[in-house]
Length: 481
Image 1 (cartoon, rainbow, N blue to C red):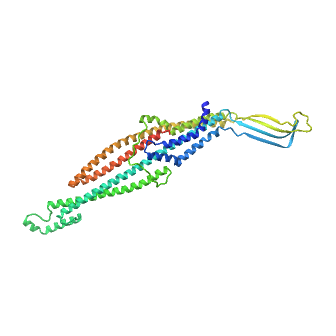
Image 2: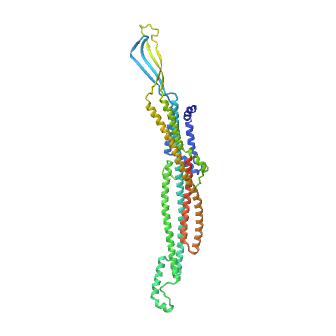
Image 3: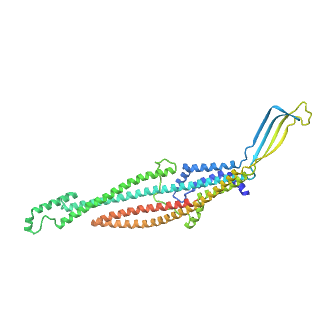
């Protein structure tokens, strides 16, 4: 009983200290992340309008504590007789009455306890909003990093494809020079094909002469000419293939740059900044670490602010039940009545002209019980609803936690898998390029492997971001700060 009496006063007195501690927790949150992300989290905590609104709501709830514990205002009544009232001991001129009503003993204490618990519920609601905001900031920052990194990888692969295009052009021109006997310069593929066709027609007109001279048809190209023509066409196909890949990557790069603008705008909105402000990300993403083992983290779900908020609501309604019960008892009032008496010239009483002081006591009669019974049942239903809501949130968070753990494990495996796959694909491309430079073969395989390497690099970045987002989500589920 003594603890319940002292607790609301303590909460009210330590309010300034509590605010300072809360702001300090904002400033230190996310210390396990990169320095830039920690700075963004602090900026979001100080500037985000939604979080500031929750904080103001919490401060407003704190101000209800002294209101709930205050006595009703005293009543002062002044009566003045226009014509003095004749009494035995003089003439009564005026009455001054002072009355102070007070609820039944313990009612104000229960009311303060309810208000303090409601303020605690608003504090936990603010903590929940802070956790959600921090998760949004982290996820958005990771997405900005992902898009910027994918742009870098795309530009690198675009440069490599253009290098392959130059190599294919060089080999194509070299094949054109060889097919023209070294005298035609750098003929195009169409010119080479046209010359080959004209040669075939001329050979057809000289068919009889060729038959007499060697028995061979000059209308058909010899094996050397056919090989040169086939090689020349293959070189042209290689150029077209690599140009198709370049066009696809250029289109993807343009899309990524537009996507980056949107993601920067979203990130800046969480920090209440202008949409076009640049978002700094590090060159390499620091891998976030779990604050403990997964088994221990699962037991920390009870620290989630939403669960604590409903528990505080339940405690507030418990206090409300006590308050309503005492409201059904009489209110008592203690007062004082002071009467101003004038002397009467014809009065011989010893009390002639002496003012009168009269103590007073009053009490209400709460005989209409329906409203008090309804108030009590209302508080009981609200208490039960808060308890069930807390259990429902606990169940949902347990399922959500397990889903995020599954995503975390999957992302962790994918990070290692795609790191190995990208390394192997890069080695394969190096060998294939060396083979193409020497013999002019396997160009299609180079393009296929290059596309596979690009896909592995994208998936590796995506897996690393997914892993960090999963850790941030786990922290938001178990966080109580």
